Structure formats: C-alpha cells, structure tokens
Amino acid sequence: MVEYNVSIEGKTVLVTGAAGFIGSNLVKRLFQDVQNIKVIGIDSITDYYDVNIKYERLKEIEALNRDWTFVHASIAGKDAVEKIFTENDIAVVVNLAAQAGVRYSIANPDAYIQSNLIGFYNILEACRHHEVEHLVYASSSSVYGSNKKVPYSTDDKVDNPVSLYAATKKSNELMAHAYSKLYNIPLTGLRFFTVYGPAGRPDMAYFSFTDKLVKGETIKIFNYGNCKRDFTYVDDIVEGVVRIMQHAPEKQNGEDGLPIPPYKIYNIGNSHPENLLEFVTILQEELVRAGILPENYDFEAHKELVPMQLGDVPVTYADATPLEQDFGFKPNTSLREGLRRFTEWYVRYYGAQVNY
Image (cartoon, rainbow, N blue to C red; front, side, top):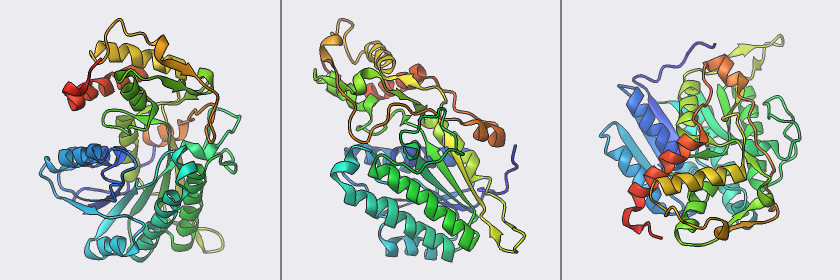
C-alpha cells in the first residue's frame, strides 16, 4: 500500500470535463469527502449528446453551495486554460475532458484532435509553467486495441490502436510521460473500462438500448452478441480517482542525476467481463422491474444480431491488481446493482416521458 503524499484539504483542484459523466460525479464526491476544498470545473459542453443532461449535472453541483467555480470553455483554448492557472493556485489537476466514443471518431476526427491532443497539450503546458502537486488524467481501455492476451495489464504493449479515439488516448500517455521526464511533473494515467451508471452518456449501450426499447425500436447487438465488456460502475471509477489523486508518484533522480519520470498508469475496471447478451438480459429485467417496460414486452422482436463494427474490439478485461495492491481498492459493484441504479434514475429523470 502506498502512503498518501498529497493533501487536498484546503487546496484548489481543477477538474476538466466537469459537466461530463465522470467529472461531475468526481466533483460531487470531492465536496462530500473534503471539508475545505475549492474546485474549479471547465467544460465546453459540446452537443455530442443531449446537453440537458450536462446542465442537470452542473445544477446538482451548484445545489451543494460549496466553493465551486465553473468555466464554460474548451481546454483546446490555450488562453482559457492559462487564465485559470494564472488566477488560481492549482494543487491537483484531474483531466477528464475529452471527446469520447469510438464510433464518433470515424465520422468526426477533428473533435478528437482538438480536445484530446491539443487540449491535453495545453493542460500539460500549464502544469509545466505553474507547478502542481499531481496531474491525474483519463486514458482508456481502448489503448489495448485487439490485444489477444487477457486480462489487460498495464505492462502489455499498446502499440496497435484500432480507432482514432484509441490513438489519441495512447498519444496522451506518451505526451504525459515525456512531460513527466522533462519537467519532473508527477503524473498518473488511468485506463477506464466501460464506465456506466445514472446520468451517464446516452451514446453508451445501456442508455441507448433503454431509449430505443422505450420507443419500441430495435436494438443492434454487435458481433452477434459475442462481445464481452468489463462494465465498471461510475462510483467505483470515482473512488479510484479520489484515492489516486492523493498519491503522486515520487520524484527521484537516476544514476545520471536526471529525473526518473514520476509517472504511473493504472487500470480501473471491474475485472469481470460480461457477455453482451447477458448484459442485455439483465438490463431487460431491470427495465421491467423499474416499471419502464411492461412485463409482457416482447424483447426478442426488438433485438437484432449484427456483425462487428469498425473500430470495435471483441473483449475488454482489466487486470486491476496494481490498483488493489497500491490503494487497497478494487471496483466491486455488480452489473445488476449498477443497472438497477441506472433504471431507477431513468424513471426519475424522464418521468412521464417513459411510455410503452
């Protein structure tokens, strides 16, 4: 177990992508856990998916009445980033701003270059010129590409991305390592595995399947259902992030007198891949239980098995042993429990819109 060496009590933390799914949950958790903390959030609130969900998340943060500042801007804008760092004494940065989604990267590559590469570069530059105690950033399980060896370990080679999204995330890891080495910036990268939960991203399967089934449309199950995903509940992801924020990799010099990069990468995943068809079965049962769909709903008539699509991979499976060894934590929310919380939220959020 590592010892915490970064106190966030009485500090200012910057969370990029703060209106996003993971970002907003992280901000709420920080305010819940830490008595005296200032959190600055930045988000460009793109219309990649329904912006109302993003504003709803921000409303929940604002309702806490804490020391919270929100900046509506893109991290791809160097001036906006520099202004935040110049006007505030930022101790810890958690970079969660990114254009997400594998499929979207095929149709809209520009968005990925702007946010994931230029945006992250701006954050790295700001951390170089304004000394921070720790920069934590989101990578992704997509960097593993179609590696055959499972579970995926952070020791595995990740040189064969199968989507532009994955390539930008691998690039982030390389850029981060270079800045860590050159400027002795403590950096930790987190490879998240298929994050889901209430108020999540509507483009993710559990959410989009629900929307389609409610409307009586057909859901497409890729690779004829022969896909496995390591579904990881958002609270487990946030738990990992909060712990990791508080331990920066140690600064030390090598035999040549130059810094050894204070740099680490962790997987955060449930380490329990679920077959897509099993996932759909559990989702169906929870949709009926929550009263979103009637008990006699004909699921078979609304399912279509289709081939694998471009940029997708057949399996994701995290080896999260280092996370458990270093921080005494491993994600443990079962898929049924997580989907139950999602369906209960769906009823609360969409209310009367839920119909058969």
